[in-house]
Length: 88
Image (cartoon, rainbow, N blue to C red; front, side):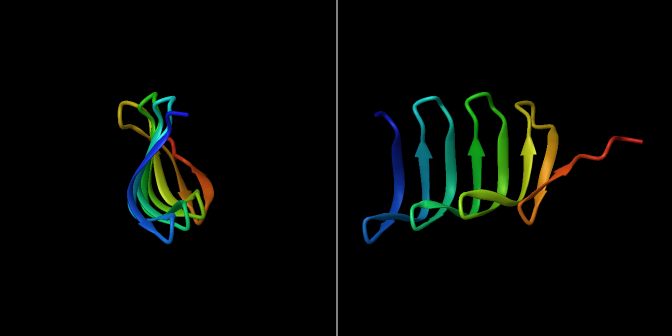
């Protein structure tokens, strides 16, 4: 199917540091536990948008989302999306 994982394994499961690549150009690089994103990592969309920080059970937990130019668009606090405050 073209998707691939490069990284550490434990008992036949993605665990430890690694990178997962999708055929559409998206990728996740960081920590895995029991085959899912868990710990510090960065999800990069093919468009260039990113979500970086702490992941919990495959979801952003304490993380920051940025657009393709690197501008912060919003964050996540304990898994809850947080709006970016307007300047001024």
